Length: 446
Image (tube, rainbow, N blue to C red; front, side):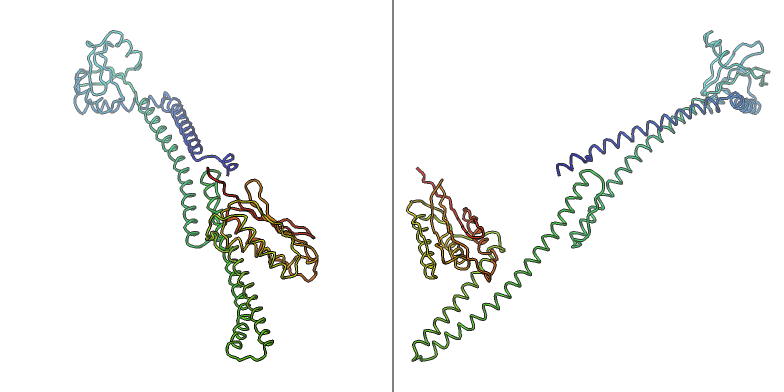
């Protein structure tokens, strides 16, 4: 995951890059529109022919207005009304002698007596050509000023700003839309998985935190599939085991019940035959014990993780010597030679005596199945570094028809010792086998 984050680009960084890109494109678009519009105004709109054409149109409108309204050359109110309808034109009225007598612009008229000399001179240079026009009180010369260029420039500026804003928000919208599409897709696929469609893979798109989230969801989906597969296999294995053991238990149980019925309902005179029935019943009971032990081992290893134990403080030397002595007698009854090294050190351990006896019984059962009776079995315990260790060591019998171990006994021992806070290890080769379990010693408090 860390390696992915190093290679990925965060959503914050991507958003920042998107905003910067949108700003750059928007500014470029604005300046492009402004430059093209300015060039078009200068080259086309303000060309001499177009300027002359617009002034001719203004002259024609003014002439019609003067004729229809019988306007005199010094009627400032009427001329102010004319320019009030168009804020981008200016009208100058000159008398026959070429003197400026009136200026009208933006709905206001100003007589020459209210103008500075430099203004009069400036207007003469700025407006240029004069057009004769008949007014109600005679012929006057008219100069026309066309300022519609500023209007077109304002329109170009407004158009550039509008296009830049549209472009900016379009880029941001496209990014958010793409991001929201990914979120909606992930949400939809997660819902489908939640409804049970675990075979549908999660779509992995992009290279950011959302991509990482998609990968994690897909990993969880795969984990659920794997866990369900394992649970199904475990369930099938449990069902097969229960079926097999139920069948195996039923056979010796039926025989045992039959022998016990014969013993309880019959008056045997033949003591030897009675002993035979008792021995057979005892053998069947041993078979039942072995089968139930195997069932316990299986469910301890493959069952629930927590094992309920009665942990208490026990005298280590007394507990271990009792377990090793029982193991010694059991093995000697089976014809094994046992070298039992006595344990005399005093210590206190925390353990469950019943489960610890199961560990010893498992090891004894393992020795009975696989040990070579020609060699001694070594049983010993040592106290070292605040740890009590118990070792079982034997030589392995080289038997061709020996059934391979299922390792359930070993795994049972490991799990029991793990729950008691101890340890269980084995060492083996082709000729020897050694198992050692250990428990921490309870330190005395002063």
